[in-house]
Image (cartoon, rainbow, N blue to C red; front, side, top):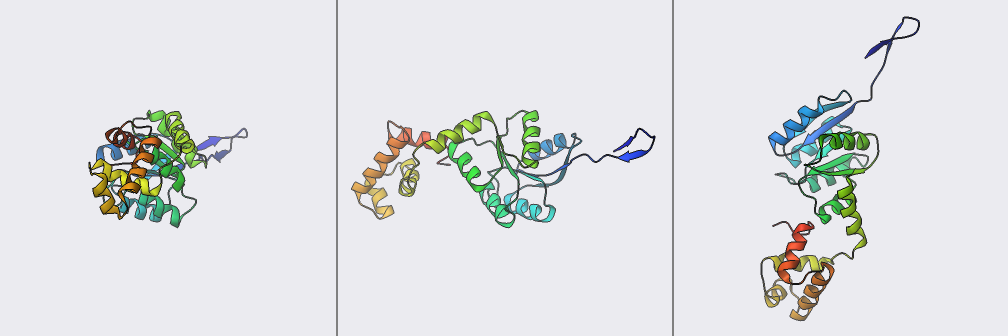
Length: 220
C-alpha cells in the first residue's frame, strides 16, 4: 500500500499480514472459512488441508503464521497432527477450531501447546480476533472454553487405570469381565469404578459414561 507523505513523496506502508493454513475435513466449512478470511486485508490464506496428514505436510512446506486445526479428521486426527507440528516446530502457533468442547479435549490441546481453542459456532469476529491474537504471539480462548479448562485443571483427574476401565463401562461390561480383560482382580475393578463415580460426581455407571462423553473423556 502506498501513501503520499508531507513533501509529496510516495512512501510504502507495509501492513502486518497473518499467513493462515486452514485444516478441516469438511469442504464447506474449510472453503467457507477460507473465503471469509480472505476478505480481511491483514489475513492471507496460504493453504488448505482436508486431513491430518496433509495438514502436517502443508505446515512443513508453507510455515504459516497460524494453523487453524480441526480435531476430528481422517488419516490422522488433530491431536496427532498438532503433536507432530509442535515436535518439528516448537514455536508453531496453532488455533484449534472444532465442534468438540469437552473439558478433556480442551485440556489436552492446551497441554500440547496449542495457542487457542474455539468451537466452530463462534462468531466470525471472534474467529478473526483469535487468529490475530494467536498470530501476534498471544493465547486466545473464549470465556466458555476458558471456564471449562479452569474447572478441569482444578478437579482431581482420573488415573490411567480408571481411564482404562471407563470405555469398558461404556460397553456395559461386568466387573468380572473388566477384571479379566485388564488382568486385575474384581475387587480392584470395584475400587476403580468407585473412583470414577466419585470423581465424575456420577450416580451410576450410565451417568458416569454420559458425563465422561460430555467432558471429552470418551468418544464413542
